[in-house]
Image (cartoon, rainbow, N blue to C red):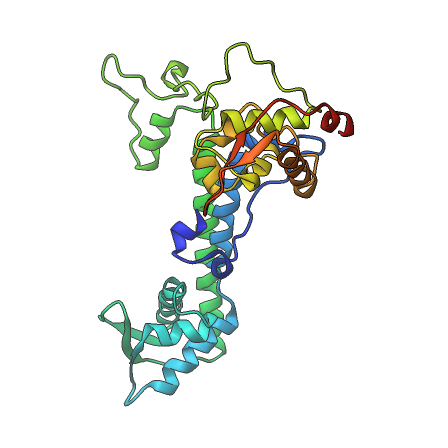
Length: 311
């Protein structure tokens, strides 16, 4: 989601994990299905972007000095990417910060911005960036941060509150009237819980064969075979291991493999341990590989008694 919002790669936006803390003793499979996980991710990402937008005194001073240094006859005209580079060293995600700094400097009376294209910054120098201006910019930046946190709290109060949502929206826009929904239309999901859609059932890529026994928690061989038999689309060695260990890769979730019965049942084992067992089943002839550029696994034959004994 962070990559979609920012248009950057993970190593650029630095959001590599925003999962909430997992309760001790709770298996991965159970944790990923809790509301704590979903809400924690949403809140974590929200907080990240609030904190990312915060500006330091040094950042504002750096931009102010660059504007004054590049000004000619009291006027400045330079590319927004130049200011973005002096802020973060990355011109692709700092446009909002540049505009925010320009706004703080204008409120402090240091500059007077002029209309310009999105990729340019134009205006006139109105005063020095002295101690008074620095203090005014600090106050302006602090007010902006407090406003963002206020919006954050307001959004989550609306989401988590048990009060009528229609009333909350009316009050937000200054309407003090009593909600009057059209006849036959529910007021909101709080006032009428029947309006809340049923939670979707866990999707399974392929139905479990009729009469097939449920995989025992400790029966790794049976779990591997079941994943290979039931996964649709078919899976290879690595994806089989990810499914059994409760992986959350985008490709795994998109294909619906997180809905398989054996998903996450062996998250207490390392990937190396599960992979070793998959390879043993391949070596014993219980499984076979389709070969090719993207090899998949297939069930080849009945269980090898010697292999089961060794397990």
